[in-house]
Length: 376
Image 1 (tube, rainbow, N blue to C red):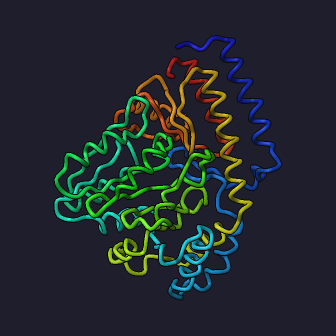
Image 2: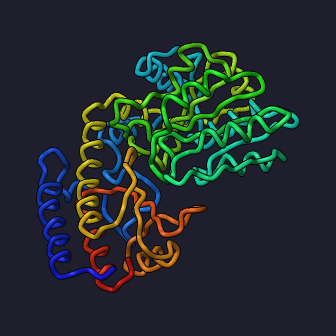
């Protein structure tokens, strides 16, 4: 679809107006205080591009002289802070070297002979690697026509298996950003048993603004012993490089996970930085505001260009590009912007991480140029 002069001016005006609103907002740090940008603009790993929370930076500076000590005390303090924040007991929490390790220890705790892993496709895929390394059968269930997780089809895959099933669900799902259908999910989790256990990945839960979202943590609080929840400090808390994740489970499940955890997997820098970030409510609000402003910029441009986008419940958006995803990705990289890769069954769509408003202005201008070239 060619971009008419009228639509081009409309899109350009939208970018300019929202840039003024987003980039000059007194609620966000001035761009001179932002992390320095070097190399391509990275909008492909769903990081919080506001950079480290100031409270975390201060905590790191104070803790590093003690880095010759083991991190046991720092880890305990973080777990206690998390327990208070989530309304849990420390016996329901486990530390992970990023949420990826939590996923692995959860799978290892649940895996038995003749167990299968059932997961949507596409979704965050690292758990598939863990399952294959164990020799487990992996059943990947394509998303439905609306790109929503097809719970009915996943249930059929469980019913058709004679042995145990471990179900992995990402909520909101990555890369689509869609919330799982709450009623169906709640009902299914209530059917968990020794032969049906669930790993729920909530890496982006803090970004969700929809009141209907229900964390699977409620299942843990209700005493469900067959559900493990994985969360991370890599996303909204901006600590991706420090590798801090945590798992939430009823005590008996947590004990099974602990038996699979690596010894001394915590580091003092990550623990103190995470605790400081968790307690900085202003930073959390600032990150959400930054995300909303950047989303508004992108949505205004996508709408002006007639490019469909799925509802956003994370710090990324899944949108149409009207072209081959790999080719689009390469063209953006050639233009100095890194965007998401191609995912199964979704060619013609792209996952775009939401950076700062000033970064999204740059992306939006480039997307308009792509339309002029007939590339989107």
